[in-house]
Image (tube, rainbow over the protein chains, first blue to last red):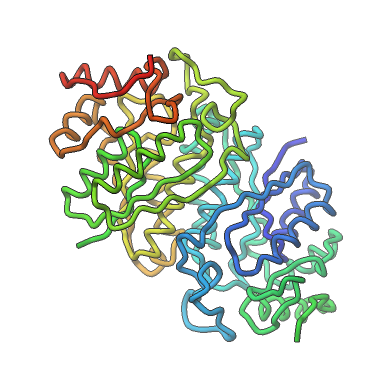
Length: 223
Length: 223
């Protein structure tokens, strides 16, 4: 069985990416980052989801991105907006997916895995630059020159199976694969129990996805 | 004054890269990673060097790469070799420079800096894949699609001023710029006081560099 490293945030997208990797026959190694995010309930969700998905290992690496700041998700002085604005929102975390994929690449190399899954999506998304196909392509090119495995002829594949799917399609696919979305946390301002605000960008996209998919939204809201 | 983020390890190369950035007129922000490396004395050296170089800020981000392991520098079960071997050595840390540059990129974006300096060298080096010009080029391409700054038209430059220099050239340049190499720690097995073993790959390359440069080696050895 081929090994794959899957970036698992605890949100809706990444667990769907994991379910897809599993269906494709990969031996799954989940990687989560404790990066000082406001919505720490997401990490608790990641633990539950990884356990329920019966992954071969789940690693949580602490990484204090709040030391860098620059995002509403990592800096308490920047508020999470309650309505969509113009351009790339303040919830963008500088270089986040670059940092996460770099760590996934390091672990993949140690595991002798050549496949990495990331649940980025460029359709119903917040406009983050590091969710686009061009980003995935550039990271793949980098991975193959940056590593010992690449220098010795190995080829890494960065799988972004959700990248062209609508949120509704993602949800339908996850439901088909048995994902329990009640266990996932997407909200940027989730409380300690993983209950969602219902008004932030992430909540809005998620709720619209369930509506469009015609599937009852299992999200637990705190209002 | 243009800002630049400089990756500062505490070794010989990175402080020379910082001295070059300063001479080129950059306002310098030093970034070090506490990544579970064996040679923790390197980090102490980074603090002293950053202070002496009068940088605008020095950030040390803890990042437990020992959770990933896979290298003699991050896994106690893998010994640091005392003589050069074939191919890429076991001191290679999987995806290290990718991870470090990703973090530097995140901080650069927050600082509104577009310049990053890294002291990699592809001449008198250990054969690490993430020290080659192709790696720097691939990371630059990535940086410009991965970030909000890049998506909005900004252009990042990854400066690797030492990449084509011999170790002797690097040392001569650093001495010209006033670098005090007695404060630097290169040894993979340095003791808590920063004294060097004299036999590992890093010690060997460094000692040969001083010899070839015709400059007295200020390294403090413990034997």
